[in-house]
Structure formats: C-alpha cells, structure tokens
Length: 252
Image (cartoon, rainbow, N blue to C red; front, side):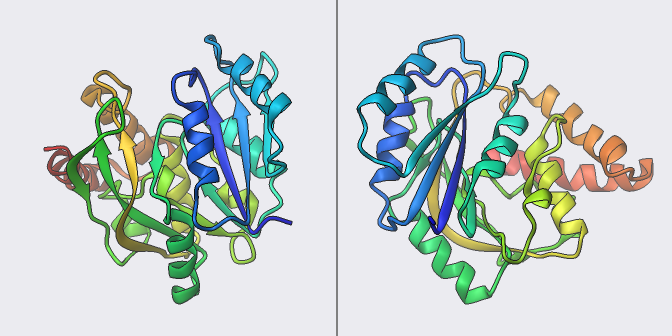
C-alpha cells in the first residue's frame, strides 16, 4: 500500500499532463500512488492518458475516467479520495508544479508537528509555470477564525493524514471555491492547519483564468460566508475586508 495518495483532477490538460506525471515520478519521496481523474476533457487529454497507461510500466499511476454526466473538480477529487489507499492524501492540480522535495519535506513537517493537516508556501508562476518571484508566505498555524479572513491555503500544497482526519471530511462540496470551503469545514471541526513556510509549489496563473477574475472571486468568497458558513452580514463584512486586503497584497 502506498504511503501517499496524490489526487489530480484532469480537465483539458493536454499541454502539460505528461509533464505533471513526470514531475511526480521525479519526487525524492517515491512511495506514492498517483490517481489521475479525467474530468470531461474536450481536448486530447483522454487520448494522451490512454496512450500513457497502455505504454507505462509504472504501476503507481492510476487513471479514473468520469462518466459524461459527472464533471467538476470537486467531484473528481472526491472520486480520487474514494479510490485512494495511502495513509496520506495530497491534492495537486494538473497545471501546477511541485518542487522535487515537495512530498519529502511535507511529510517531514507533518510528522514533526504530529499534524492532521499541513500546507506550504508557494510561488506564482506565469502561463508556462515559470516562477515570477511573487511568493505567498504562510503562517506556522491557522485555525478556523483566522482562516475566514485569509485564503492562504493553496490546494496543491496540502497534505492530510487519514489516520487523524477522515476521508469524508477531506472531500469537497460542489460549490464555487470548493477548496476554501473544505479547509473552513475541516478547521471548523476543531483541527488546526500547520504551515510550512517553504516554497515547494509553483501556482501556474494563465493570463486569463477564473482565479484572476476579481469580480467572480468576490462573489465566490461572499457566498461562502453567507450561504455555506451561514455567517451574519456584519461578521461576513468584517471577514471580507480582511480577505480583500490580504488577497490584494498577495497578488501585487
């Protein structure tokens, strides 16, 4: 049984999915399984994955193909979690880049903190994942209240210990900003997330992307406060101001 299960939702990733697989294969920590969940791609991603699995001898790599009626990153990650067998679960988006020591350093830090949930610092990259020098540093720990005013936990940086936190809690709801909703739900249960302030991930930011659309980001975060967390308007406004200031500074 693999020590770490790496869950990757794959949608229209023909330009970089083979690089992503190679990147994981190059990790300094080698006891992992890579679960690629093909998620209704309309480009050649599915064909590329089929050709890869037909020719690959690496049995650590699995591909799950969702039915046509199933789609969305949250569902894809949840299917991957259900199929996982590792003690630890890591999320990775197909277009992001891990440093070679990402798993090794994350596991060391998790064991040092005896943590259920850890995350790391990351650096923004351009559309080709070339680092831009803009680094997002992370606090040593964060609880639910603090997390509400800062979306500092990035999906491709997280690691969970399923001996300490259930797979059901790690699964993501089908809402906009499903990753942030998941972190808040976990922290609301009394867990703390521990931050390793070491850049182990490059976050690829295309020139035009959902996350770069400021208007949509504002609507998504406000809906999380009001409709998912059920926070009052006054408190939502307070947390939103903190979020907006930190989000702006992070992207400058």
